[in-house]
Image (cartoon, rainbow, N blue to C red; front, side):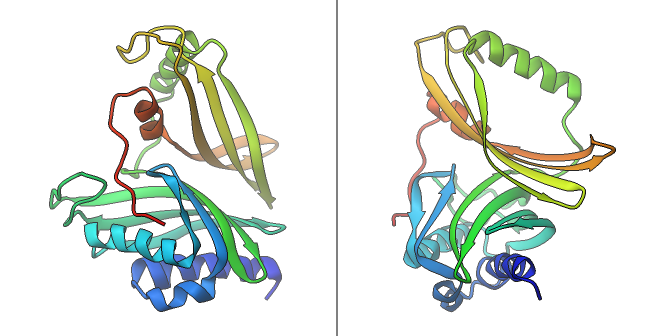
Length: 233
């Protein structure tokens, strides 16, 4: 098995053995001592194997029957992009949200850096639904409203992976609110939000697209929702 395939397998083990099966004894084997996870739901960051255990514990307490399935993976150099779908029942408190008893489906994209056979750093984005792509017209209206409210809006690519006919990108969007947005009057608030995308190319054109964007983090920075509780590190 090539090193790229080994790196992919390492990330799959993390999602299967630790997150799905709850085998926390594997954490020190899979993660570097100085591991850092960037998850917008936990903006304080998750650090080291012990941080991973608390992070997984928080999710599994809320969704004890959670199951992760890998939909796609790309690898290049020391980076792996993984697209996954998780399903579970909301049975416990999660970041201040009381249990609903509802069955939840979450789609996500994770960028992982592997060094020395362990996951050294990761960035993840997800949203609580997996289904048809959003209506392009509605997306276009949303982008137009954002550009009006944030005239200096900028999107900067910070990492990319290419394998075969697919490419993955991690990017940061930033800007300063100077106009009304979602009913919020402008107050010079600067925002920054992360996005992750995977595309399949055909004849140098995008044939398929999967994307995750930290919309919750955006509205949190605008003051629409309070900051989340933290798992600690």
